[in-house]
Figure (spheres, rainbow, N blue to C red):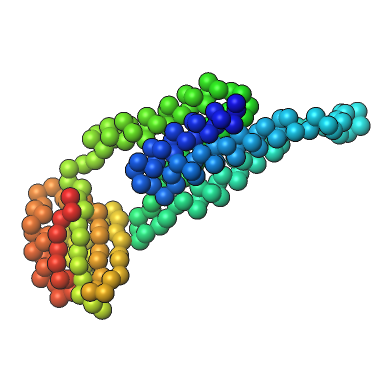
Length: 215
């Protein structure tokens, strides 16, 4: 029953990740949750055939194996984090793997209320709270710019032109393809700056073949 509860609650978070086409989806989150629950069950109940006596110096610690889940899940979460240029992706996926492991451990220990409430909080933070945070914290002067470079041309003049226009570069990524390079950058427009001026300035560079605002 505890393994099934871990599978159901971990799978619920995995389905949300699957719907948003994230790297770790239903199967990954379900397996992490069930694995954490199994380690907790092993820690607590797998040693009934052994004799433990404090007088003989042989003690029993039901949390010893389960505690290693906290350390081990960090390696799995670190593998989900990807750095592209100055931007970092996968932090939310790593965090969901972390909380799914905690949910699985709670189910393995029979602490169902904590597991259920943790799942609800995680789903709310991944769904409705994400929409609210975008509306509240996403500033209207933050825009994403896509620049196509000619073959063999460097990106340094483009970045220098953006800084010369007073734009704060939050992140950028570069993709190589047959026709040259594609540079995607998230910038903050200073007050009074016009997006069309940025397009005109970058269009004057010899390195640039096309410029457009994505959003």
